[in-house]
Length: 112
Image (tube, rainbow, N blue to C red; front, side, top):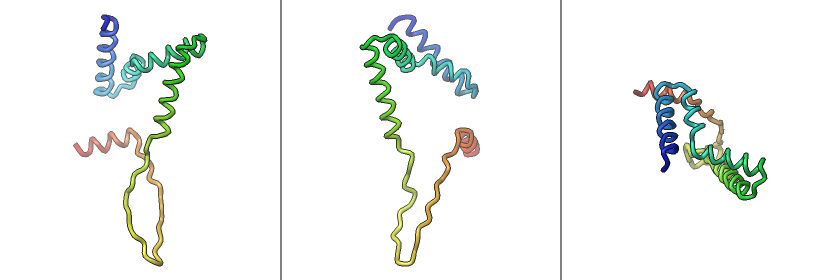
């Protein structure tokens, strides 16, 4: 691993831990911008899609397809309960709103 690559990895880890510990979104953004996946996707898009190089265009297509398939296969639902209904009984379905990150953090703090 080159010295430049090591420095980027160290800087990314430092930005990520600082961002998580302080709650500062700026540090998290810096960590995301330094991620190798984002750098590869950015290079593939600019060189392949806009630059016209077919090899990088194929890389961009593969990365994009992988992301689309992951989002399509994401599972957001859960089985909460199963019951056998008898004659005359009925079912009422309601959707449960997914909690925001802020609500999840607040709940985690309350448990601690």
